[in-house]
Image (cartoon, rainbow, N blue to C red; front, side):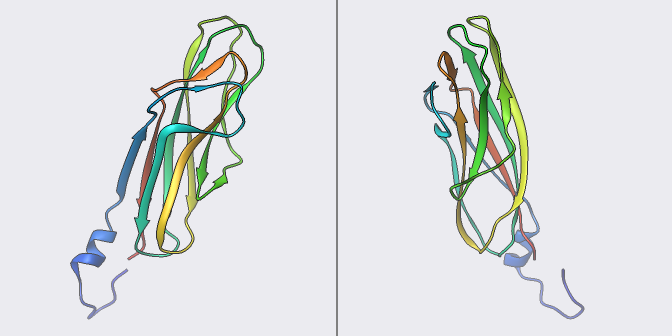
Length: 142
């Protein structure tokens, strides 16, 4: 927000624009695993203001390599804290495959460096593949 008579600076104007970051998995995550990092699917960014809003578009490419009826899940960790919402995958025929997505939204604390990454919990016979990705959009106050 700009008040009457305030100086409009390039720095303040730049913060009005959302910033987008993206990372894709660099290798597979083989189950069984519990809230394990999806290799390469991590974004580290720096905010200039406190209480910046983030929106994460998370995609988990699950592949079933054997028979199971259990759920696999994917989440987003923000500065080491794992969200309570999750994307789920379930299939029971070997070679079934699906990309499951979820959108997350929240507020970052202080200005500074933040890390957002995909974490997943594939069960035995499930693999999270390299087509998994995270896209983060940051909105900062002026």
